[in-house]
Length: 446
Image (cartoon, rainbow, N blue to C red; front, top):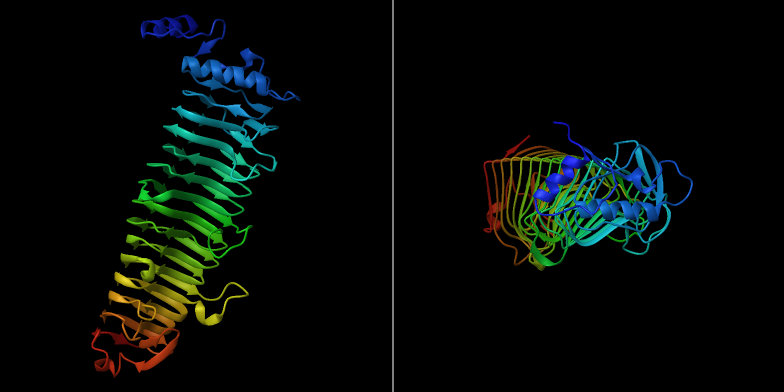
């Protein structure tokens, strides 16, 4: 049986509602926006006609289809059930007015697909996005291209849903900023040339988030607004617990590839990270629980840092990572503060990692008295300053260093540290008995 407008409307009536569209042609693909006077390639602003079409289609809960071409509009509001669809790579909306190109508040099941959404570099209000969503449930942004946002590319405030298989380029602030959202799937996107951040996943207070950030490609993340790490991160998870960051390809960021700040139970697994101008992977400040495993880091000032025991940062495993080619990358960075492969402080196992060319230290355990219950086992450290630099300051806790292989550690395989200063000879060779809190055994030094 042929599916036409009459059959669709009859089916709608049988389901208990009647669509208010009187003369709009429906098809298996949805409602044609041209019926409302929306014209591809028109020189003028089409915001009014587009808004009417969006409202009618959303009320009927059918997709609104936009044919290939350019549409100039702005300040468009998406009500509950809005489903705006175009032809991938061919349907372009260009911002002309309003605080955002598209926005929604207190809605559900809003969908965008196959659209090119262009901000044209027009400056947006502070904290505003080209696509701005507040309290939208089951949002879906798929196979869209979002370019030239004069603020954030996409903001998701108190939302759930997905952003997948989309491209976000040239956002002046962040490509994707998510705050107080939950259970998001952010996957298989391409993000490039963000002004201050790639993906920011934040919570206003420390609490469970449960989102997954997976299989994205993120390149050329800047820090236009400066700072000491709040900007310039490809992925930043802040106060959001129970987040998985998996399988992302990250290259060239002004600070970190992945920065977990006060983010408990974070899993950072199988990411490929290169050309980072600060710490490649961070788990810092007041967190409990971090798994950092099977990542490849090639080129950073520091590879992996699990830190801030003084702020409650503790409980981690760092295993199976390849970390190499570390050293000073920023002109104002003191050389002695860069070039550490893996740094940890409290209640952490460091095992099965391979670290190569770390001019400061392959592995750093503790900072002053901030060292507790660290096990460093089964790692390979090659071409490093210190193989393992472990704190022996009064008050530092227990560390086990066993079964590691060291080759080319020019300043010693295992050396006790007082803050930045070497305080012992090579404890892998002699003198370890002076430090009963250190358990050193079975290491191979070449």
